[in-house]
Image (cartoon, rainbow, N blue to C red):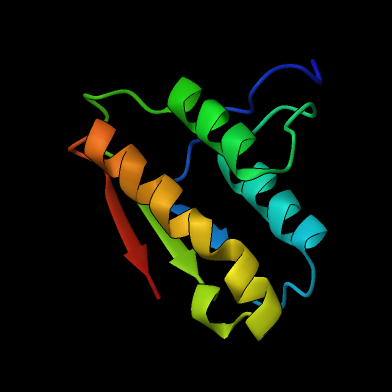
Length: 102
C-alpha cells in the first residue's frame, strides 16, 4: 500500500464520526480516516482543505455527514470550529456537495 496515496472513498455518505474525541490528535485521525487522506496529512485545517480539494470536484454529487461535533468537550469544540468553515468553503466550491451535522 502506498502511504502517499489517498484511499478511495466508497461510502456515500462519507461519515465523519467525532463522537468520543478527546483531543485534537484523535480528531484529525478521524478526519484522515473518514476521507482517506494519505499518511502525510498535516493534521491542521489548511492541510484538510488541501486534501479535500484534491478529492472533491465541482461535479461530484456527494454527501458528508458529521456526527458528534456539538458533543465535543468545550475546548475541543472551540478548536474544531474551523471544520465547519472548511466544509462550507468546500460546499461553495462544489455546489452538488451536501453537508449534514447531527
